[in-house]
Image 1 (tube, rainbow, N blue to C red):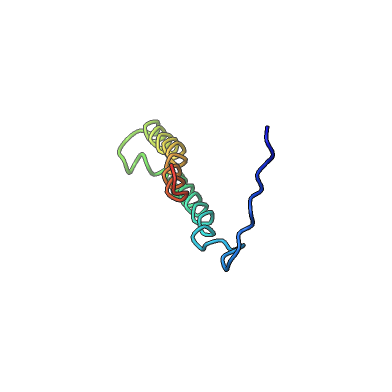
Image 2 (cartoon, one colour; image 1 turned 45 degrees about the vertical axis):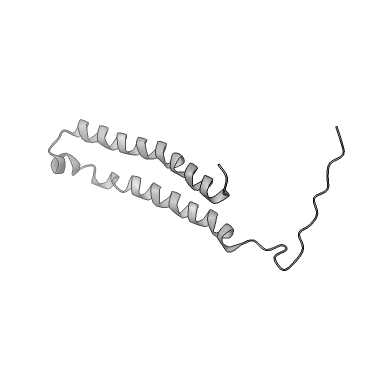
Length: 91
């Protein structure tokens, strides 16, 4: 194996500064994740009323809520993939 190649330090007026867009990436993604979690759990207080509102049985409503929460749990990380791909500029 050869010697590691040293990487020169950046110079100029932008040295050591992070672009505004890069600094906002993590807070925006964190806010989106929290918002998705809140939107998925907001239906839980409605559980006692859902059978009456949907004219179905309690068992059917519980399966409906389970399917909704499960699909949200699966699709949330999947929706982060295209966002990561777009933010990095390369896929």
